[in-house]
Amino acid sequence: MKDLPDRRLLLVHAHPDDESINNGATMAKYAAEGARVTLVTCTLGEEGEVIPPALAHLAPDRDDALGPHRVGELAAAMAELGVSDHRFLGGPGRYRDSGMMGAPQNHRPGAFWSADLDEAAGHLVAVVREVRPQVLITYDPNGGYGHPDHIQAHRVAMRAAELAADPGFRPDLGAPWEIAKIYWNRVPRPVAESAFGRLREVLDKTPFAKAGSVDDVPGVVDDPVITTEIDGAAFAVAKASAMRAHVTQIEVAEPWFALSNALAQPLLTTEYYELVRGERSETGVPSAGGRGSGETGIPSAGGRVSADPRETDLFQGVAP
Image 1: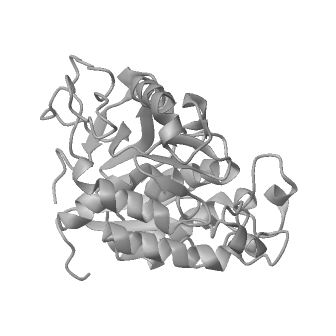
Image 2: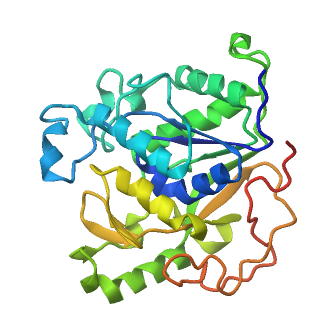
């Protein structure tokens, strides 16, 4: 096994652009600090809607060329974040975007939603045993907002973490490896509510006609669920640039952005997580006052003070 850096982070996402929206600041921060950041994207995002009229021909109901185009967008986004290790699960195009829940595309041949779980997880096990990450980030069991590919990405990531540690599973894929800490993407409800309140006050000064709502943000949970927050204010420009690279999917006017529904929402540069597997560090700092105020001056969780301090580093308590 070749030498690996002391800190290694693996992220599993459903489509190109999910990583930049959810974890762009986190990825840029750890890449800049010398950690190995590995992104595995499960589909090419072939069923996405296309925002720019000039690229509308890429859509699945026209040229059906959106997937290959989004491969290039993802590469450009990763360059903005300083991440060089980005892969597609099983190779580019192995699994196709399944469309929204209930769509006919859910069950078309090759759709990720219809993939055999252990087969798909096996592709990720190979990555885990190669990269040997101490930390994994993925979605919650609902995929953040119920998209079938996000749900499946959660299932595959959690199953792969289990199988990668099992010496009896596919020894041909490498030596077993146990991931020390697993996190799910989250957003504290008070942060989202405060951010949308600020957005409504300045909406007429943005290029967006309408504002979204908290319900448009995946993974929003009550404040006590949050265990970890990463201050990415120093990487706000990198995150916005990465999101902007996904030109078919996102319109950015920081500190706001909109998806194809044209509803504005906040671009968060403090990113939040729930630790669901592994030991919580005891060296965190309470999240009080203005910490995490990268979102247009909004305190992280409305001035939360807790007896259980949040972690401020995904690798807290983790051995190299």
